Length: 242
Ligand SMILES: Cc1cc2nc3c(=O)[nH]c(=O)nc-3n(C[C@H](O)[C@H](O)[C@H](O)COP(=O)(O)OP(=O)(O)OC[C@H]3O[C@@H](n4cnc5c(N)ncnc54)[C@H](O)[C@@H]3O)c2cc1C
Ligand code: FES
Image (cartoon, rainbow, N blue to C red; front, side, top):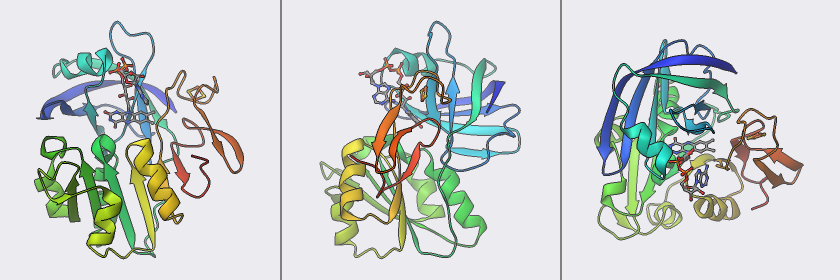
């Protein structure tokens, strides 16, 4: 973990309430798809944890949805503004190239998958992504995703793609996989883990410190309590006691 000052290079609205922010600075501590950063925002005491969506030398990108005042304030920040961030937080996904991976995203849970897909593309693999959301407006960057992965889309209201949830879509499209990586709403992860224990789920929790000191983000697992910020946010699906 390292505390760094990152400069906003871009903060673009990509849907009604979702923004893509590019931050530049020393992000050498960011190593693994699925990690997160913890951002100090002006006039907010607690930092806000946000997944690293994509990263490379000297930059990271984050994709965030306006939920409350913190993310609303973030959406208004302009290019050139500097943010104090803790980077290199969390474990990230345990990506393997010797199996047929399936990526499963629900809503803003799509965020970490841009770096996951980049990893697979660099190995010559176009991974399968099942991406669901409430409705069409909640699906973001789908043209880009269609170029870099085998994309299967669904919406709860049927306004785009298959009408139904990601589990129904996996069955409907006869998607075969050895192992999956998932990020999205708690109920989606719970249902996936119960149907398919052979995968990893990226969890969210309300966080205090964000780096393992306060125990505020503990969850129950088959191996005892674990901290989402330190031992997670990615856990083996079979380990989490939902
Ligand atoms: C490891 C991790 C990675 C995350 N990655 C992303 C991401 O890539 N993109 C993104 O948009 N969001 C992500 N989040 C969620 C993000 O941290 C919250 O949306 C943000 O902190 C809300 O701040 P706020 O000030 O806008 O809302 P607040 O005013 O703090 O909260 C608004 C409402 O949202 C609820 N809430 C806030 N944070 C959480 C949370 N972590 N879990 C459940 N409910 C919450 C509150 O209880 C309240 O009802 C992530 C969270 C974690 C823990
Ligand atoms: S937020 Fe403090 S230990 Fe996880």
